[in-house]
Image (cartoon, rainbow, N blue to C red; front, side, top):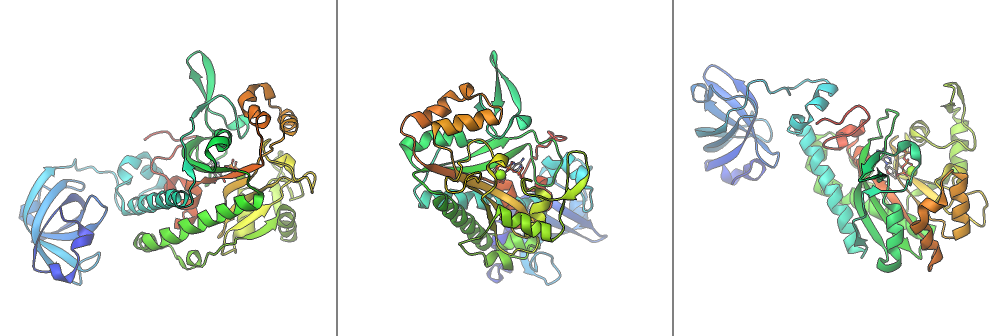
Amino acid sequence: MQRANDIKTPINVGKEITIRGWVHRLRKQKEKTFLLIRDDRGGVIQCVFPTQQVVHLTIESSIEVTGILTADDRAPEGGYEIRGNSLKVINIADADFPIGEYQSAELLLDNRHLALRTRRMIEIAKIRSTILKFARLFFIENDWMEVTPPIIVKGAVEGGSTLFKLRYFNEEAYLSQSAQLYLEALIFSLGPVWSLTPSFRAEKSRTVRHLAEFSHLEAEAPLASLEDVLRVEERLVSYIVHNTVRERSDSLIFLKRDVTSLKDIEVPFDRISYYEAIDTLQSRDFKVVDANGDKRPIRIGDDLNIDSERELTKSALTPLFVTGYPIQIKPFYVKEDVQNKGIGLSADLLAPGGFGEIASGGMREDDILSIKKRMKIEGLDPSSYGWYIDLRRFGSVPHGGFGLGIERLVRWLVDIEDIKDTVLFPRTMSRIIP
Ligand code: ATP
Ligand code: MG
């Protein structure tokens, strides 16, 4: 079967072409009708028929056309068109296809199963798939083992407020928020491991960077230092960025993404400490909204969030690690820096251009007493983490890893404000259909 993007070359001009696809656009004139056909790879080509031959066609009808390829500067999408001779109809679509040229974001989301046929969504889907391909290739090339941890779990990783509960036979269980604890169990026998799983978080605040279900790429390695973890993280991100920009340049151009700054990304990434970050924000008079809804200046001890990270990265050109957060604003498993009490051995990776956090990584607490103590401080019951604590009883080693949100990466690489457009079927507090 021939495809639109393969046939548009001078050597095919004058040849007979057969193409199958869907009527993407339809412009009927008195004598001639111009069809834009979309093939099964998302490529499009114009096709011209005498109007009386195609009067019954509707948008999204599936058809097979045969005709002669001609070069015509007026033809959209590359200056080639097919002068149609014969037409076979596979299916005539109902005439009320709801997606047109100008639509509200809500209507597009309500009809996401059909909006996935728009050029924009097709190009985003291609980029997303390429990002996943190069993520996997990076780990294959570097000899990390891919593993498949469970999604139905018993323990929380990132805090109870965002847990999705489910009934598991006769007991309560949760949808996984992160595979990290399971990856930690695997490093003792499998060495460096990674996984790509859905993670679930009942995020109640509506933001442009949170979904209730997201694709989580996580990696964990034994006998590693913080430096090792951050090096892998930055090499992975830079590898994905460069290969995706190269392989998907057409898609990025279609989406009007200026890739100059992406091409310039180099390792090592810049680093600042949490304290420097707060300092910078204070010097710019940055305010946070406190629990009562009042605005006050940001201060040491405040976590960074979507707004402060936007401020920190809005004029940055390359990704930035923020290191050395106070341990009390980090989850229980983050290891404390023994040289620097009160500071966690972890770092968040912020994307430039205001996009903010795309990954979090660091060293895990490997001492049994310290981890139990941290659990209690956070109101967790160590007895419900029995197997996890065992990992500190039997051959504990310094280890660390990171978690990266695929949608956050797509959001930055494509330059999309709303994270819902980085995923095919978004799940948020207000959306579970389609
Ligand atoms: P944030 O501070 O943005 O809420 P987080 O620190 O809670 O994120 P982590 O627990 O560090 O998130 O998860 C690792 C990565 O997973 C994040 O860096 C981010 O890329 C991604 N991620 C986390 N929560 C979400 C979400 N609700 N939707 C999409 N991606 C997410
Ligand atoms: Mg984080």
